[in-house]
Image (cartoon, rainbow, N blue to C red):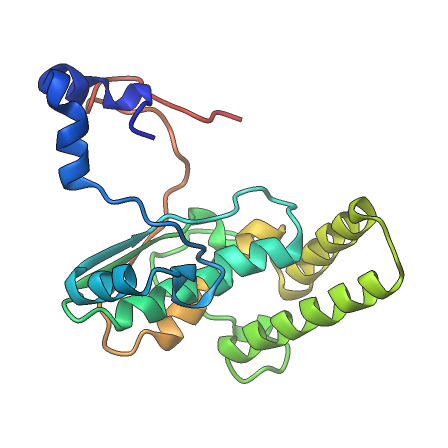
Length: 222
């Protein structure tokens, strides 16, 4: 990551000392947000993070609109809840910042105010969003078991799980798997946050830098 063009200004400023500077500021931790405790297997490192971290920012997301439902649900919704639960265990935590998307509103018309989402009629008889999330996880597990029992190819299973994601999104009133799982993430986090300070940011899009570290930087355009 630090080899990217966006670090050019720091490289120019620190010169030969750039790597030492980065080593003092950044510690890369292998993990997986779709797993409990973020998939951190180094127990010593995990305990150190839980002891010292006071600010958590969650940017992790699958942004493809029609990715496999199991993958998107695991990262965008379950992953967000795992980050929340991990943050609640941090001894010095002051704030969790979760990056969502403006399109959690789905296809609702008119002016939409910046306020917490509510499933409302989309709950389809469920008592709360956590119940919806649990039900969707169970549905995914059952469908995967069914597909594997049919001896389908990986390509066929992927296609089936992509279709399932779109079906479930439409069932609850969202246009695609991405916006549905991001919306569900917001609602699950608000429902489960307890006393944890939580800020949800809903950008409309990611575009190039205006000024810092230099104008016009952008990576990963699709």
